[in-house]
Image (cartoon, rainbow, N blue to C red):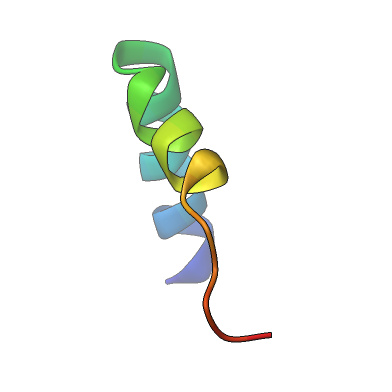
Length: 31
């Protein structure tokens, strides 16, 4: 199941590079 999720994310990165960038740029209030 996890592998499928990773594969899906990989496809998302290929199609929409804005998604991972948005997550990375998003500030994390909890640390």
